[in-house]
Length: 250
Image (cartoon, rainbow, N blue to C red; front, side):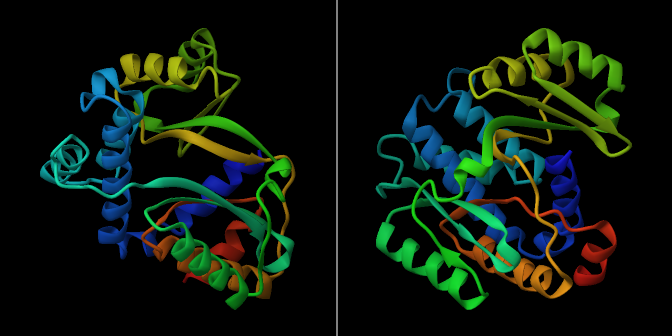
């Protein structure tokens, strides 16, 4: 599946992301704070907060950092910023469609920075919905292979309302509709514990295999976007071979 291949691409790039761990913690903390603001500060009663905390734990985020982010999102917690969820869409090098999701307290600043990044690396930012029609909005949940065998994950996920399960030696990817995402995530969590990743994402209907030069520019663009404090997630319809990914990230 295209999305699963992209997940492998992301894993190849994880080494570079490890070097940016403080940036990753900042993004996770912002999501936790916004999630706490959007509902109760109790993860048991706030699915978005629970998912944000699980994402933080999957990245080995310190417990005190998680607690501090939750506190900042509660009334009188010290974070008075009004974050908005914004989505940007456009094309990167090689005609790759990209969707950028951000949490920002200044839409003008973030839009200017994202547009500048696209332009610098041979891309172009478009209007909202200019590329999202090339993707399906789905729930995606990842578990390591050690969580359970493929048959067990499949049975639990299917009973909870999942659409599909893909398993290999690296782990299990469970996908669902947006509507069933919460129920599937909770059922898997009850059986196998917290997921390595559980979030709504954009899955491309078709993928693009960029040339080596385009892929090199694309990876630079992705790095710059992910280095932006406001950018939370970048999704694309690229499919770079394992061999090329290893060559470009060596």
